[in-house]
Image (cartoon, rainbow, N blue to C red):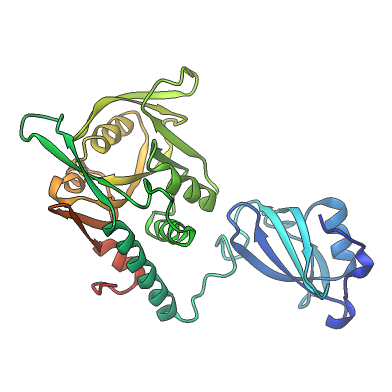
Length: 330
C-alpha cells in the first residue's frame, strides 16, 4: 500500500480529484484510467478494493459493484508531485465495461505499431540467423542418417536474448493465439520461457509436458510415446483435464514427431486443442503440414532454413498478417 499520509495527496490541484491509473499486478497491462477523491481513496486503502469517484454521475463507486469484476488492490503509488496515483490490482474478470480486459484497446495509429513490429521482427531475424547448426543422429526411421539441429538464439543462447525481443515475441504470440483458451501447454524445456510469460499475460494456468516421470499420479493426465528426428521417449502430461481448451506452445516445429502424437493423444482424451503456436518452423522437415493434416490448427512466427552451416530466417505469412502488412518483409 501507499507509504505516507493520506493528507499528503494533492487533491486541490484537480478540484478535489486525482487521476488514477490502474494496472494489473501480474500482466502489468494498463487496465483503466479513473479518478479518486479523498473519501474513495480512504475506502480503497481501508478495504483493499478499488474505489473511484465518477465525474459524470457525481458519486463514489466501488469497481465491480454491479459487474462483479472487482479489483483487489495490492499497492498504491503516488507520483512525484503527489497529485496522481497508480493502483496495482488483482483484476477479477475484464476491467472494461465492453468486456475487454483493458479499456485501452483502440489503436490511434496502426501504422506506428506495425512499424515497431516490423523493426522487432527484423531484430529477431538477425538473432536467429546468428544461431548455430549442430548435426545429430537421425533416429526416427531409416530414411536418413543425420538431423540438422538449430541452436535457437532465442531460447538456447548464452547469454539469453535481449528482454525486449522476448517481450515482443510473447506479445505477438498473444495477438496470434485464439482468445478462447483455458490453459497453455508447453514442452520442456525450450517452450517454457515463452509460455511462462504468455500465461502470465493471459492470467491462465500453465501446464508442462515433461520428459520424465515426476511421480505425482494425482496430477498425471497422460503418457505419450514420441519419436522426433533426433530423439525418442515418453512424455508425461500433467495438470490437464477433459474439456480443457488448450493452446499448445512450442519452440520449434520440424518433423512434427513430438507435436502430432501429443495432440492426437490429448484430443482422444477430450482436450480441446484451440490452437498450436510455434516460434519457428523448419519447413524442410514438413512438421507444420503434418500437424495440419492431423486436423489441428497451427501457426509459426518464423521460417528457418539451413544452407550449409548458415541459417536463413524470414517471417511467416501468419506473423505478417498479424502485424498488418500482409506480405511485406522487415
